[in-house]
Length: 588
Image 1 (cartoon, one colour):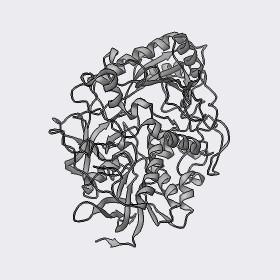
Image 2 (cartoon, one colour):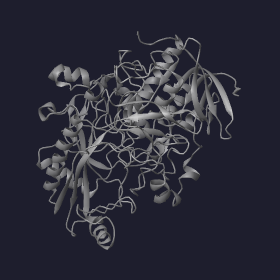
Image 3 (cartoon, one colour):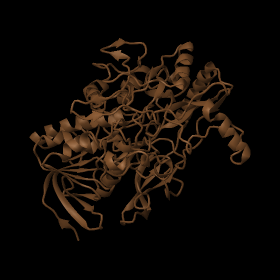
Image 4 (tube, helix red, strand yellow):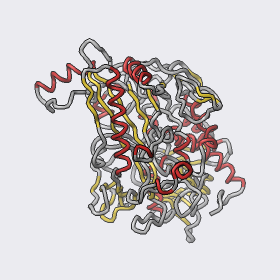
């Protein structure tokens, strides 16, 4: 039986980037705010102190900072004819757990998505017409344009001290920056990071081919920085222990030392860790959230009433809670009706590995999570992608994220998978190899979705969420086309051997690819095709707002943290508007 607690004005579920941003931004309203985080408290000191934080086995291989799948997981299948089975260990993606969420173990890559990514349906129809959209592809606009989101992108970049080079300042294209990006009002707050030798090789080769290389935007500090809130950052050491790790010198922007302490310092904000939310409780009419039910570390059940509820968990967790709480109509792929679970998407990868002679040294152990050289010549909206037979595109880059000894073992195709010859090949190629990667967009499809599993339950008795997903022909064409571009760049670098990595035939949930899950509770202007209105408010329950990548109707050729945070900042403004006059912010 639940213990009913004193009501709060606002209840926030989850304390990663979005939960932290919303707690900090809404604290100034003076309203009582309760934040519930399923994991444990964290701080740079003592949790991420050197040398313990550089334990690759603990953090990178055994996933110390990630979701515990023995408590809650999901089931997976490629299509509806298969029986979904539980994901028993993390692989393809790595959701975070604990204060700061995945914003603790991210790599710091902080993109603005391209204008096309916000309005793909509108731009595709204008350029190519309706016949260009393949059957089953559910191309949808956000209802929020790039220009509307630009001030919030800017605010997050200055909050995080992002290092980079503008390529489009007030419509003026600038060589050396990303000339394909949307127009920005000002330069990045910090200059680009020191470029690695692989990045220099990539830049030179890309220019000889007529492309437009630029340094990747990085929330790893290129110099000491103090953000507009007065939070101090250290400069990056280029140690290579970023992704899957916390940063011991606060050189990687993370929610746990930026926005969260500012929220926690307010008397009207209470943060409860080890608080696992089970469901959102609605009134009898199913039109208003009254409370949330959660379990504490001892397994005791509590009911936390609230006047407004914000779901700020990881993308998959938000959708699961909506399905369990019956917020919005579940999506049915057979009829195409319903909205919760619709348009789940991932990303597709391809590329090339370039192997050099023993006189060409890459020093891969010196790197940073977001250190890279990139081109967007073949990303979404940057070129005539339909001419190549697909909709979408991808960002191509050479990253220098750090060649850690367990995870980085490049060998040419045909090398034995183990034994003496494999060991010799690892020694030979470790210092003389680089990767060129395509990070490809994935559109929403009628047959790719999330729902509740009819068979499997978590340890709390709740149905697991079921993921039904596979790569489609459109994305495979795109990935193969961009793999060929990667090979051209690799050959222009002058390597001894270039090994092409083509599109995967099927999606597998086993090997790690990216923690870039999107969709399931998407934004839009049409309540029959979206779970949220353009203000991140659920269509059916007006006092529930939802943040995160679950709101993206399709996935882009870029990391999602930038638009996730920008939308969270915009959602905070939308909630302030709601509080003045509670009710729907957009007509249904």
